[in-house]
Image (cartoon, rainbow over all chains, first blue to last red; front, side, top):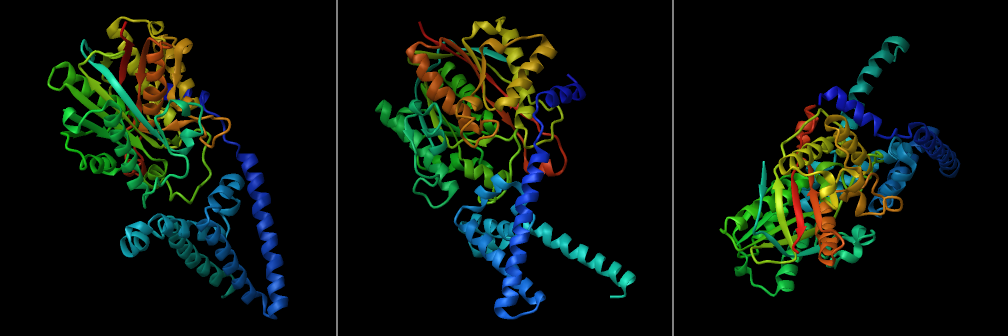
Length: 146
Length: 331
């Protein structure tokens, strides 16, 4: 049997992923998380009498701590399987990818285990995040003058 | 290549399962069941898998009241890199050892090699073991175990457990009647989340060749059982055999991956996988039901995707293998 014909057999017997449903769930839950973060931001502004920019950093830290604690407790992966990309796309997913890698390799030691593997998943985000920021920075400089 | 055996019997089997398999519909057929977690008192997942294998070997030695010296050869394989679970298990036993790898088709390869040694009278007793551990496989082939990225519908769930099969030249209730060695097949599937599609053609080819070589029809067997194609791979295999060879196996065909778990209730997506998935079903459930007389002739076809993540990242498609072994109740 040639590969093309086999591909037809496979696609005929393979279910479609519920991309629309998954997208809606991720949009609603992820959007909800965004709205909650905004509330938290305003709360921090009021409570600590600080500007938005500084309160934003505090909000991010809060989310990272909550996500990492949930990862350590073994709750985060269960939530991810239910709400799809909603918790992976925000900063919570970034924190989770780092803490889950650290947990996974702790038995291989501090250097060759955690040290080598902690950015196993997050490395891509960091690398291309930095590269993207560099290019967008140049574009911004050209268009808006800094 | 099809070989007939006149003198190879299954003396006994011993099966060890994890908590997910214990929650499944075949739990009553397993000899040792772990119910709590997947560490089994060990510190790491990898060591936990070694423990499973040792429990299987100790289990069969105790069950048959034999000594290590009574076993001429130990054949074992698993999914860990360098088949580490088998190697680290074997260092604790005073038995000549052969380590083998055919991914989830390992139990079939082990039985083939073991049967050859017994049939040629070079060994009186051969112990074939295999294992897999869900968390070890997740860590090695996918993401960190706590990461839990959303899975595709076609993804399968690596079974946790170990199985030991004791082959002997002494007559017993179930014998290995014949076997067919499969070829490595690759029909261009690249999707690591759809192993059923990767492995179905390998199963199809070996089933077709086995039936052709032995001049049998599918209904000669009470059951034809593939290893871990899952619910979608099962349909693909039936479609493949029908389209390619006009061969209909649907009346007595099933897949171990769809039998080990309650697919509706347990979080296993398209079904179970891993070397021990077919091992547990074939040598827990099927073997024990053969002893009871429910099945008389069964063709088991453990299926394996023999791939390396490195090649997958280099955009290579995934090769697969399956071997067919005919089990028969001795009248």
